[in-house]
Image 1 (cartoon, rainbow, N blue to C red):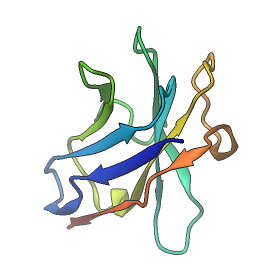
Image 2: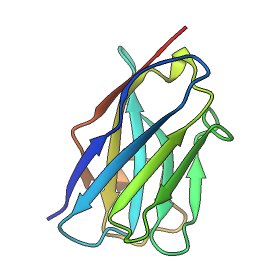
Image 3: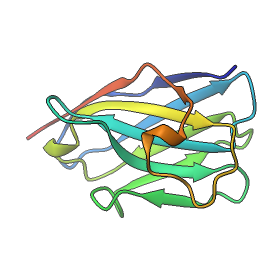
Image 4: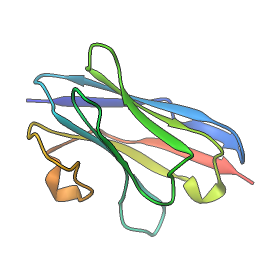
Length: 124
């Protein structure tokens, strides 16, 4: 099976930056994504990436501010978040699947494995 462990969340002022990490172990995951869930809202797609080749997709709300990437050994996925806004406050989840999707899916149901989540709080 696949285990995902997120880290890097915290409290930051608006305009600041954070980098989330997701450590992947178990099996090779070809599709990775980040989702987030704000209080009282449904979980939403943030960004996704394919293994090797690095095709990426982003939600419109984070495009040009967030960057998803994979580490050299491809067992770590990062989410670099710049120009953070209070509305980015949420629990951020790493997600993965063994399938070689194309394009990278934006729906929760496409991802089989999930991390426990890490809190990101952006103060105004």
